[in-house]
Image (cartoon, rainbow, N blue to C red):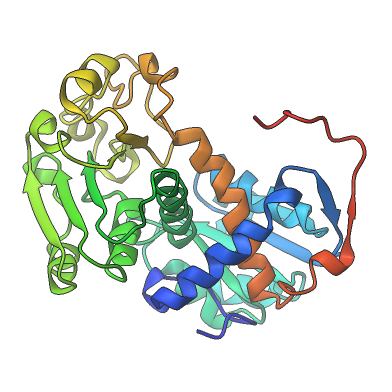
Length: 338
């Protein structure tokens, strides 16, 4: 695809070569994300950060990524703090705020809303999550994490074995990740969920049409026994019709160190898009996994900054200019990010 000036709304925009381009640029962002170098390639540029649904990691990660490239961030959080609360349409909001920004990162609870906003925007828009639909930058950082975790074992994404566990019906991160995996070869996907929270059928069929093995199961232990990655998700309670309905599924699939030791291969990587639900009634990833070296959830969040820096650099067409606007820093303490 042509990145410069483009919206990033869905992973279906990408070919495999596009994903590899993003990952190559993300690799080059590492010294800047780790504060060993400083670049001002986006000096004077403004990110409009518009998050109309609760977010911590994604919102701050987008902002940090833009700051690390030398740009500035202007934020709107929550409907109550925006003109939408006064009845303004997405069209009008887009026309106005795109006049104040060079690029916009947006999250909205309604599926398709970010694309609707982007259609009226005068600047590129990056989808930070639209309801239960998609979360393209999360899927990219997840796949980038998988690539890096497997590279240390001499493996690539082709031939990946992955179990996705939890709320697969409403979990937009797994929807987007499955769509990205369709670009690769010989992937085995085990989809572990309650019957009522199964992966949408069209996504399962897309996996199979791509030549992948896609199995559906309700048995956690058997499903995680022979995989490279266990990707856990929380129950998306905000998308259920009631709290009582969500509570029916909370805590159904829990992974702790005992289950991991008894059923997983020794080097199985544990991933989660976060936040993980640490309440006693949930604990889809138990705290006793925190010292497990294969728990990659915080490496995922670090990788999110790299990937989002890469997306900004590509969309604003400065990927080849980052180093020219850079300098080394002398306040960096070796080992700070180890």
